[in-house]
Length: 311
Ligand code: ADP
Ligand code: MG
Image (cartoon, rainbow, N blue to C red; front, side):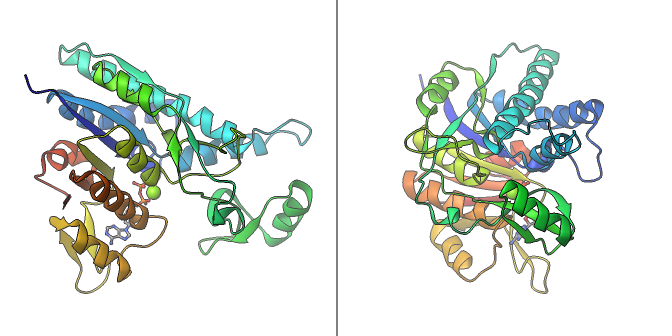
């Protein structure tokens, strides 16, 4: 009997909070149910499924909520805020899947794994933090926060001043073998939320944000997944994106994609890390990867839609 394939599916932050939504619990459930409908189709196709997710908007919501408290009340550190979003979003995804599958007459275990990811203290990003998080401030407020809290703040090209934190490369997923074990047992596993909680080799928690696409790729390699699928809000990978000569790629070899990456088609912070993530996975495993739209998850997984990256 052929064993079931093991697939890692990464969800973008938008999959759980759409642009323009306030984020009421009703909106959160409605959005999670839409994502669960897409994911259920993959899970029902004889697949052992591990789901990862972003958390940018939700970490922002948590930090802002604490900022509105009186100054003497303590604030969570970034690693703790990340852990909060793993429980919160993991619950939304896992419970929506349980309900969606039950509506289809299927009982499947779902489980959320609070996931820690090892990073190096020597990562260059600690000397040059670049990842924007939380609210926007005026220059005067930013100067006060840098003095009082020791934050590093930079002007965000979009609006005002914002806190920036390091985004170190993920080196190792602490719970990877447990995640593999749970998935091979048939449970749908939600893990590595928000890129995982960063800790050093000595297990010291660190205030940083790991890119969720790079962490998902690392997990997929560490559990020897058969396919890595990255779901987002565009139909796939384009060259000359948003410019004359825009062309969406339906099938591309890893060599060809790497060439396009070097030509600068994929900006950091959006499509860049997704492309890097699939290149690393396909190179290391010789297995395929795909990038596509959440609503088309099943077809993207099957190789019918999105951008398919081949060894
Ligand atoms: P997610 O929350 O899913 O990680 P991101 O906003 O980080 O989503 O990345 C997806 C975005 O990348 C798309 O909405 C698109 O605007 C942008 N993008 C930048 N360059 C490209 C490209 N070459 N092809 C496709 N999308 C691109
Ligand atoms: Mg992103």
